[in-house]
Image (tube, rainbow, N blue to C red; front, side, top):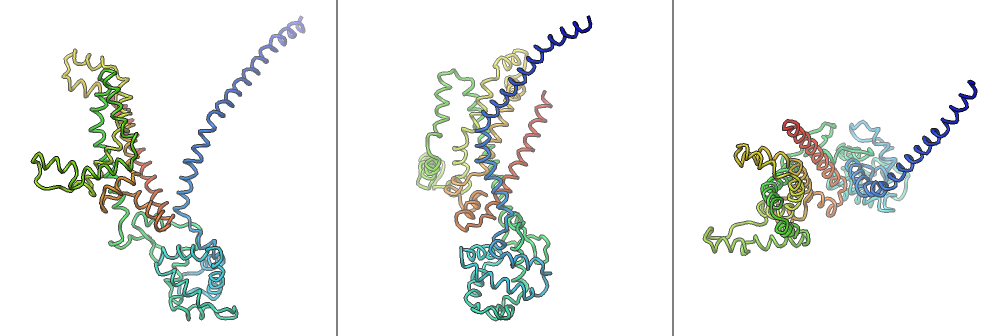
Length: 418
């Protein structure tokens, strides 16, 4: 009897086990299909975002130019104690590898890197290379010092030593107006060389000002879009999206035409008698704000409009019917429900404004250029990729920190209101 019951139990368990196996296979297939669907997006993000950002972060500390061209010199000078001048082995390795650096563009790479330490290093290397003797049976310390007395100075070899490690904090420190002194301690650069901290402050001020103006102008316009009848709101929405159909360069150039001394704005103000003479509205901070707000305003309106469209109008009417003042009902009932749109719009506009380059470069003056201008300058003009990457990396870090603070503050406000 016991064996018969066991057989029945085993037979009953077989269909259950089969169903479990089929369920596991189905779940596994769903996961595989989901991964295949996500794979193109993940690959795109890896190629378009992760790899370039990782490369930029590495460039900001990369210091392999001299080590790749002069590996023996770099290895030998790292063991030098920094007192007096290096020994004969360092001089010999340097002279031999300097002669070999003419092949493959190595001389240009080390000359460019050493020039960041001292702007006269490229000419010093060229002069030394021309004066090197053909024979190797010489005392290289005496030969190099005979070619140029600077090879007998400790500061010259300390500059070479700073370029020997594979990584450096030179670019990141320079982006904060700092440098390493000869003894290795971190100090501020000379007052007449301090630039980038002020540039970062200016960038944050311009981006923050543009964001606040866009919020001030965009909120009522988005509210109007959300409350108008569909036919009228669609027409107004087309007007909001109209700037997207025009090139950014064309829009920026149009503002130069409008705001110049003989432009439409100054002519209109003079015709109405508001001003007696043209005022400076372009190539200064005013022109930058005008042009950037015009370009970024739709990015504030659209998130606000999408959120406001989903807010029921009955809530505000109910508050008014219960005795609340219309403004109090709007401020305490309606506005809190649009916080997600405000958060999305402000952070989108702010982050986009931080990286603006064309508009400030064309419409602003010398004191209105943002961090992106100097990144482009070091990339396109001086080929100083380390400095460009350091400025970009610091701008990325500042953006992430501000976003984290902003996100935390918004969440706290929403928790308090709920």
